[in-house]
Amino acid sequence: MMASVVVQPSSKISRSIRSIAVVGGKGGVGKSNLSVNLALAMGQQDVKVALLDGDLGLANVDILLGVQPEYNLIHLVRGEKDLKDVICSVGDQVFLVPGGAGVEELANLDDNSQSALIDKLADLDAMADIIIVDTGAGIHKNMVSFALAVDTVILVTTPEPTSIRDAYGLLKSLVFSAMGKLDVKVLVNMAVSQDEAKLVSDRMRFAASQFLRMDLGYAGYVLLDPKLTEAVRARKPLLRLFPRSAASECIRMIAMDLLESEERIPGAGKGVKSLFFKLSRRLGMKVERG
Image (cartoon, rainbow, N blue to C red; front, top):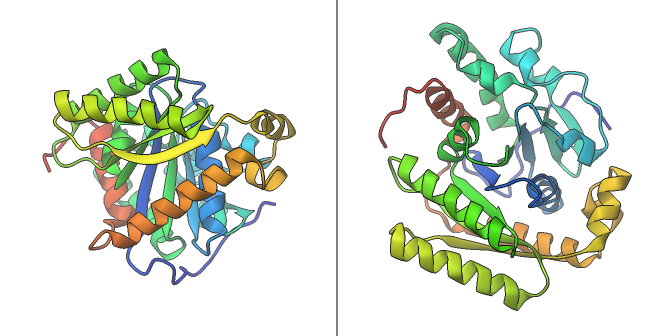
């Protein structure tokens, strides 16, 4: 399953790489599973995807994919390995950038080392069409930094009142921390029905409009599905082990909608270089407006 990867960008998305961060206000909302399966669903649509495990200290995307990376981002940060050595193919035109603690150390590099590292990471522009970042749960500096550096944020919640409250709290933190326009879409996971998911999303979108003065988008919903638990225990992605399960069908629909919305957005994504420059500034507490 693992290999060094050198690939050419597909023709599905011709502009620069666009970045998506999957975030959640609390643990247990299924954020990492969604990141993995969304990446695979996009890959199955002839889109090359880089999946970055940004959950520093609690990285588990490799487990969900059933792979054991030999190296991770920390080896790239320290200059011990090149990007081609760190990334590993997981099939379906998706490759994993294992997280480790590398991004956190990025903030401690001097300017020259930081620029050299970002130049290495910029090679992702030639390898992928989209980068998906699985962030850590909760409101902390690293997660907020990722969310404010990417083009699009997928905010995951479940229908549970505590999850909705935590997701709204995270959204509020992002709005107050952002210095420019935010593209955030709520995704309701573990819903018992489409109607329940719509009710949850409508409540959050109304609150965001009334109290945060922002237009919160809707990414869709994933139905509660016992097959997901089986897939996690088997250390295999849901889309591969149970491709026709209810949750798999929902994830494919969300992936298609995200890809179509990316195609409708005028102009190109800002690219990997811009993403990591913004990330490093925020991790170093050197935030610029705009």
